[in-house]
Length: 467
Ligand SMILES: Cc1cc2nc3c(=O)[nH]c(=O)nc-3n(C[C@H](O)[C@H](O)[C@H](O)COP(=O)(O)OP(=O)(O)OC[C@H]3O[C@@H](n4cnc5c(N)ncnc54)[C@H](O)[C@@H]3O)c2cc1C
Image (cartoon, rainbow, N blue to C red):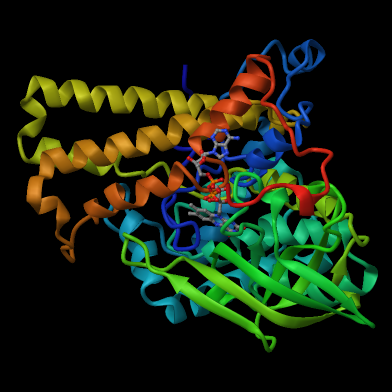
């Protein structure tokens, strides 16, 4: 069935200091996007109509590169070979590197910025964009292929995941000419790092219920409130923030989006230490932070449209990086080396995980097939997110049961096994919790009745909070 595993298009596990457990590039369809869709009651995004199915060839998955894609892949490999070192197959660095970097952020940022600048100058930074914005007028599929190949090399790309995947397309679509001129090139070239300031302590899955306020003061706005789980805020120069500007309107209709300078007076960033030992995300406090009106993204009270643009655009970063590491292959190697693989029960458990990782890969290929054919990936994204986070947790659990106490130690020349275990829970939450995934699958895939949305038309200020 599979022609060549090496160029596999399947979903990948990447452990990132910015998304501190794993990213599921193929299946993720925005870690935050999914939560919006279910709460908006939209419906159209994850529903695959019969005509769409027909367009996609009756749901058949194409596992191979087209001749054009193969040619592009060869070009990417050549460029990468000339500039970067390959990662070892299933080597410790696959997991260890990113986490080590999380603990040495300054080194990470310098090397990530240098690599991003090289990509920009070669047209690989934002492949589907024009050369002046770091692109070469390519296709989303070419971006995916470059990401697949790039993930096999020892290069650091994590700091730009949010900026490139989510913020840059938003500025391009919703920003003014002046904003595009000022921010885009520096963002895509990696000179300025960006974060996404959406989630709040009281607004996660239901992010439209946010409380951080922006009040007009002449040509400026005063921002006050708190955001949380802001990945990479401590390294960021700017953030895309959504704020409440009309408490009298229903929750989706009183929100405005802004570009905020993360170094402005009144911004306080407090990293949150995680179980992994790293501090990938933050609490961010805003105390009457002044933002010029020229930094408003989109119209006043139309910020929900801007937010959706941001979250929809995470799709463009599908497959933008990652190798099929995820810890299973090193675990299989370990079981073989230590003789544990002769235990029938262990063999069954390893086989089960392997089968599930293949299922995830092929489900991810469905997204890539539609992307390759120029259509929008369907509900497989939410299925994959749910399936993948459970798989990762189960890999971590088997790892710990095989290694015993040894698995908790951090040993220099070895895979950081314990990170598998402590990094996995974040995947059940980040950008759409398991329950939200199930709601999406229920409503959009199985067409079950929708959740009641009682506050949809009620003024935000009248909606009970903290209950
Ligand atoms: C690793 C990581 C990185 C992140 N990075 C960012 C970032 O850079 N920027 C940003 O803005 N946010 C970020 N987030 C936040 C992320 O988007 C939220 O964690 C997520 O949307 C869930 O929100 P919450 O944590 O507030 O949980 P809540 O929404 O409060 O959910 C609490 C519980 O209630 C359940 N629940 C909620 N609603 C429903 C429902 N309708 N039906 C059934 N059950 C429900 C949930 O499943 C969960 O179990 C990140 C999160 C993680 C884990």
